[in-house]
Image 1: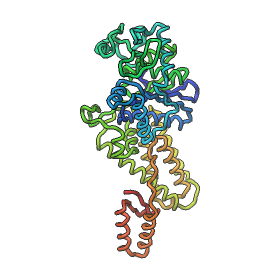
Image 2 (image 1 turned 90 degrees about the horizontal axis):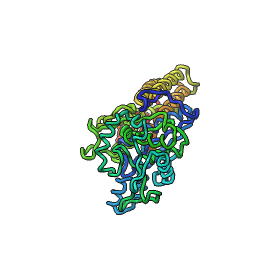
Image 3 (image 1 turned 180 degrees about the horizontal axis):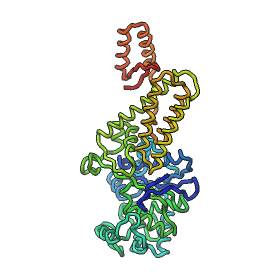
Length: 465
């Protein structure tokens, strides 16, 4: 499998450190609010990567953290008159509601910053002892100029980094020796949560959290480190610097970064009024089409969200569901018989097309194309009354396999109430008796109750309107 490595700016073959075991660390959300659609894109992308690697026979250890202490969390908690820990826990609960709604599988390990203080302080001590960090009052800073490779991920000239950092000195503290230095431990301010440390009461800097947690749970170089493109600098750049100085080995072999998301061709922003929470979209469209929409574009390509894009995803999802329903009905009605060679060959061709796309830097866009080509072929097979059950079952197995890897088409079909099924049976009997007036009356009654009835060669389909 080839993956684009931000560090080398080229696609590289995935070669796990430990054979078929793949260690992945993905930066999770800062839990001050519900997740927005940009967060959701990264969640769905890396969840799909995990699913695909497992499909290809890898043993995956997937780690995604929660930053549960942060300036925004503290500010909002203070405004609400609750503790920052209570607010963070409430938002983590809401995160899982949205993530599971998007069919994102829970990580194998979900470490929290507040539960990792000891390992963070151990790393801070290592950096001080090795001369890469220094104490200034109650703060501890990493000396960026002590790390010769600083800037190697973002590929930014050090002069540019220093100039940009100079603009933030007033925000980050006046005791830094160099504008590029960054905090690994912050002295507590009044009204903030804090932990005891050799440097006084304080809390961890943002970047050190991920370095300490990934080092703790994967004792060695990560196979893949992921996140959104907005994290390349400064977060991931600083992670690399402090991790490699403290540990003496590379933090990760492959750095994957998902492209950003625009709304109506503009950067998503609350001030611009184009900021969408996943919860809001799910209430309008459901979670399922949101996930499909987010995977319809290859993960490194900038995605532009519009109402039309969402409507297109809804239409695509409906087409998938209709295919699944007609295939199940066809299997029930088909004559017995082993899968035919032509059907097996078609299924294998679509699987190989799918694998080729996904092996090429997780190209979910082309992977979804393979699924819809399979749908077209399934519809042709279903429409032919001579297609035997074994062939249809082979199509169903392949269809479920590929949609399962993508994590799409996961919501259970609505159970049809018994009285609606009874009405449909009465309508079928009326049609047999050529009592079309009664049949139409029953159909109108079914529609009035919110269901649609369709007559096909394979029988009668009933679905929620």
